Image (cartoon, rainbow, N blue to C red):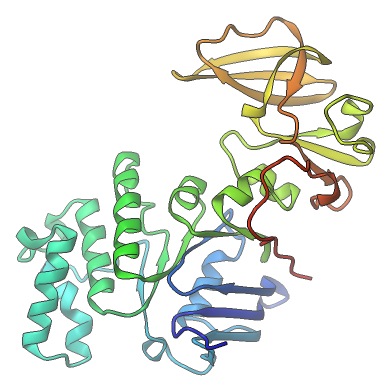
Length: 361
């Protein structure tokens, strides 16, 4: 099978800083034309991996292939990619037009072609009226558009983005998520996007690569990592609020759980899948938060605190109530290893098209 020129393959890559492994034997394939998001907390290795793909750093071991070619010895300029940084990296003394065109001038693209590309990209990004301004005269959102325009005008098939929206306010971040995704799809770019913000990952990604402590926890679509987390880490990291994790002993013998789930297991249930039931394990109400459309109910089952999401129109539960859940929506994990036990997955639950759970041994 022929490899696409913009497919990125990470093969058993490690990056050591002294005795510390920023990346530990990571392998994953990033498909051409996909919006792939590297998601995880600070220090998980996601930015290190992006820098290795870009050629700004070099792996200690393993291989990185772009379009089937090992790029380990190639400088960034020879990897046929562009990059958008968190800081935007704009030249303060240059105009918007000069910032956008900087890379094309370095590559000695003809003046006529530079002007043609500039007009097209500026119109696409809504920057046509701002080309003569300096970066200091722009808002944060406008500066972000300039940085993106500089990447797009290069016409490189791969674009790497390192938390490009983190300096924007919440409303502007939401708007730019929509714009970024639309531009990526319109141009057919292969995007590798680093973020610690799960909302960015869930709303923009074709596939999410969940990372922790230099390893990959799971690779899958947003729907897969949310509905079927492969590990306890993913279950606790994805979701606002995250998945509730109960010791299996609290549910031992309860109806609705597939036989055998109990001692030695963790039972994962999303807040929206919990409810007040006619019968079930008895929970104790701790507090209620009103969020407009929803209420978040804080409660305790045995020695475990949990959160239940319910419609604001529903009456809050009493001080003590029976806890129920949507059958088939539970996730069962091995309490010792933290990995999902797929033999307990409910046969009627929606299954992903293919298993994208990724383990790094």
